[in-house]
Image 1: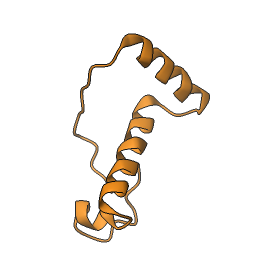
Image 2 (image 1 turned 90 degrees about the horizontal axis):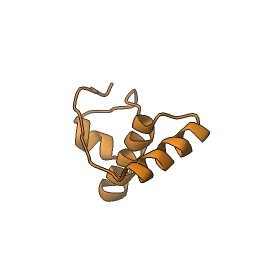
Image 3 (image 1 turned 90 degrees about the vertical axis):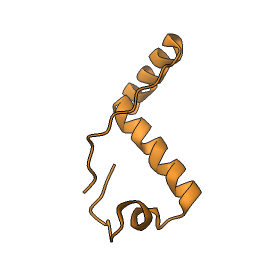
Amino acid sequence: MENRTARLTLLIDPKKKAVFEKLCAQEDVTPSQKVRQFIREYIEEQLGADWKKQVFGQDSKGATN
């Protein structure tokens, strides 16, 4: 299971933030869920489909989001 205790702080244009939040609401996801999805997709793009073994060091079938 993933450990969600690390915080990522970023600065973004307020207008882009508002649009992003609106789009997330339309998909019924939180902005945090969407950012985690973007990060997972980027890691998989860079490291390949077996990235969970590389990141978590084990068979991480139970790890989500």
